[in-house]
Image 1 (cartoon, rainbow, N blue to C red):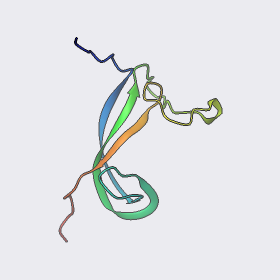
Image 2 (cartoon, one colour; image 1 turned 45 degrees about the vertical axis):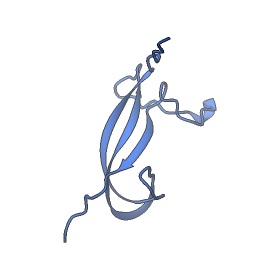
Image 3 (tube, rainbow, N blue to C red; image 1 turned 180 degrees about the vertical axis):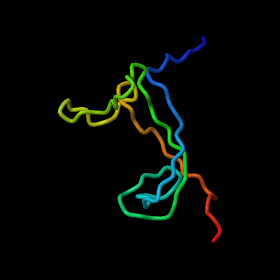
Length: 90
């Protein structure tokens, strides 16, 4: 019996990033806080709903009791991976 995954209601886009914000945690999967830090480069995966409208930013609404992002309804950050070995020599 063969299993075929149903189509997702969202696409994923890889986005390169660079930030001088201080990491809020350690490891490969990382988030950033408000404090300044060293330059960090990486790649993040962002969900884009299939019914996305140009110029709109679909996000969860607290007044609708949407506390977690749903990739099929919201533009959401799915993952962040830090790239290692990008330091510049001084």
